[in-house]
Image (tube, rainbow, N blue to C red; front, side, top):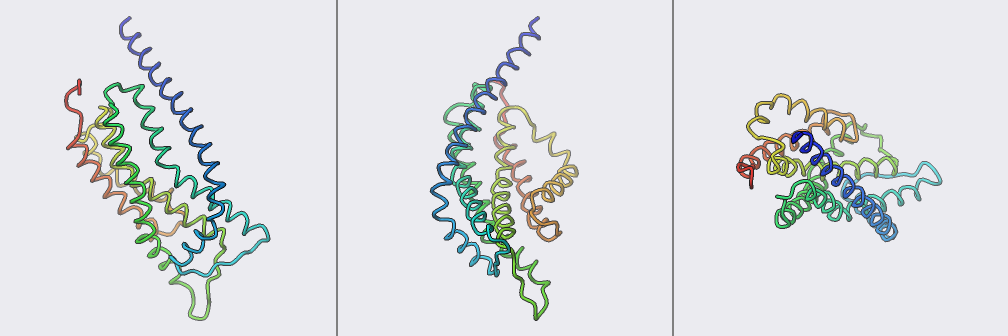
Length: 243
């Protein structure tokens, strides 16, 4: 009977978590909509910045493409700006399942997750993205100029930047799971070969283009982040069940 009660309590905790997560996602969605309205007025400036950052020549291929691109940039910029709020909602919902997840730890993980997300996005903008685009444009002929669709360009750039921001959260996710007692560094380190395969698959999914070079630009940092996560788990892993 006690085992059934424990299972019932665990199920109730996770249902409470899902309910809190649902409410948090609704709040985040409303915030993104509001920020999208404001972001629309900065969409042209953002597009100009991205074009100068990459040095590509853009072109429109449909009458409605310019408007759709500006709307897409507004939505992505709103989601980008709302990430601190979204990350807080995701972490705050865990407190209903894990009472040991104190407000102090919640704030610490939240602050680190925000910093890591924007660090990953900044790394992509300043390092990975310029090299990736330069590599792709390196195959054009000497007398041929690439006219890239502005819609495909923004989808590629924004998707790549956002994916890198999420990828940089990997060490914190691993440390959090270790602190909550859901994952052990010793057991995880035995499956490094599986981790390499998982990194390759995840890089292929998250990279907007199918070329191996851009996949490598994501796969190498992703594996290094996995190793950083393992190190962090060993340093902060939960050892005392009462902790």
